[in-house]
Image 1: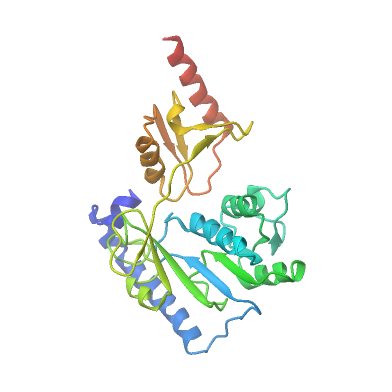
Image 2: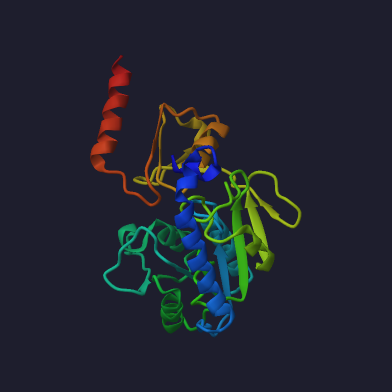
Length: 285
């Protein structure tokens, strides 16, 4: 339903316009306060690169963060990563990730980044606190990359990169909740780079395409080509599940069932068991 509202297919977005005007007024006032220096942003002693977006929902920021960190590491640059830690709840903040940190504590995206890059990663609702935690434990860090946080103006930044879903782009163009926008599209004029995930890039935009690799058994670590999978039940707990399902079909996989949950959601064991029973019953027919 929310996708239809944000795309303009459902007329219900008009009922939410008063809340959107309020959201736009407040968010615009916050940015203006920092721009006029009525509020002071904290500036880190090292460069800060923000990878964010203008819309709610999954646009592909985290893969860009992983790619950027790996590119910097290949050039011998020591990188630290900070995040809000969406979907996680730590006992205290800031939380500096370790090999024992769970997604329940830090959220799935920070854990993924930590596992993929082996870079120092810290989460906190106040991103400046996360930066300070990294620099205190890793004083050799030369640059900070923040996963999301374009609208977190409390942390000064040196480079802003915006990631756009090339298919959905900005929906109906309205602020939350009537539309998907956190800020108006005009904000793109002030950022350093615009990356478009899928779709057709426009002038000045950098194209990005996620290339599917292998399917990984999270329990055993076994890998295989996605096309080799059979009797697939596709389960997605990401910002934009249709992209995941479309990727499977592009790889030649036709899921027998597709299940979705909210971003960073946990699939309950009972639900997984029900899916397993259905698969077993289907095999006996």
